[in-house]
Amino acid sequence: MVTIDDFKYILTFWKEYKIPNMVERDIHIDLETNKIIAIAGSRRSGKTYLMFQCMNELLKKGVKDDNIIYANFENERLVGVVASDLDKLLIAHKELLNPDGTIYLFLDEIQVVENWYKWVRKIYDTGKYRIIVSGSSSELLSSEIATSLAGRNLTYTVYPFSFKEYVAAKGVKINKLQKYSIEKGIIFKIMDDFLEYGSFPEIAMTQEVSRKLDLLSSYFDAIFFRDIVRRYGVREIGELNIFLRILSSSYASYFSSVKALNYFRSTGRGISRITLLNFLDYSRSVFLVDILEKYEKSVRKRIAMQSKTYITDIGISRLFSDIDKGRALENAVFMELLRNVSTTDRINYLRLKSGKEVDFILTGKTTELIQVSYEVSDSSTRSRETSALVEAATALGLNAGKIITYDYEGEESINGILIQYIPFWIWALFKSNTLNNA
Image (cartoon, rainbow, N blue to C red):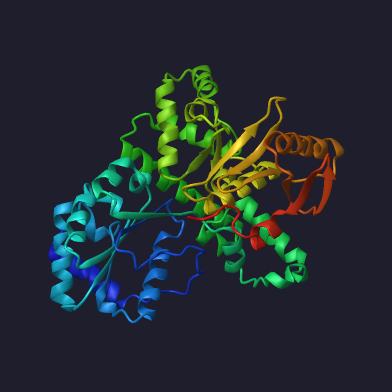
């Protein structure tokens, strides 16, 4: 049983803790809102540091540090904590500090506390607390939680560093007005690391390759055992391990449960298609992967059509297979788009009547077509990418399309359609948000 003394220990440790220097995230949390703020995302994506960033904001605005509570529920002193124990946190805080005024309550990795949202709703309704919670599961995004909090929450999803944040973590200063003065060799080295080992914050700050791989392996193990096996009570541990390895290696490609099922059956493993689909849902719920649906106006058709999977961080893939540069670049573009998408906008892939495809179609206030091609010097590759864009733009009544490349920059007009070739690093560092944020 977790006691008041356990919470006093947690609070005392926090009071003595000095918030470290951080790479500022390109995420603005509205701390003035009268809502419960939920910060969701994969393990090690920087949720805790985003909380620290919020705390620094509050301190700069004059909020007293005694009015800021931080508790990480993965601390060993809080093992076994249940929702009914959480009142002890507030009692411990009042006994130690006796604060006056609004209390900012930061609850990190709250998903480990069963029925946490019932307690949070109770405390929120008193009007005395501003509550910020974080978790490594999309439980924070689920309809159950939305129903339980009854519109009381605002949710922010945190991913590993964007390319812009990754460059900042490397200490390179980018001047938007002088983008062509950047020494390209430095940017290409950073971009190659980004596409090879991913952008988890700790990975970005680590130089040794062996250390990067050790960290990535520990992240995968935590996602596997703590976030999926333990949370969902998975018994088919061997099958899950194989499935996640296959899924992690198959980024930026179609997911077929039938093919996966046939593979398992060919190895003599008895597993159902429903179980495999559950594995995919679990992987999405803990932010290991995301899916991209085909562009269709009908919601039913979108759901019924084959989807593509993208991995939240390419570094996990590096554990199981060599990185395919073309697919890695496509995966990176998808993640940059996903970070900027609003609730009123959509990202899909587009399959044309001719059978050709456009990697991404962005729809909302405007419609945009984006292809990704690592290398466009080969005439057949270039023709394939441009012909799909031209056909799609013509069909949709658009006059332009983009091709994101590794290095090539330029533009051309084909049948009245403007094709822009933009290197990934320029697009990722200097673009305005491609989608209109809500």
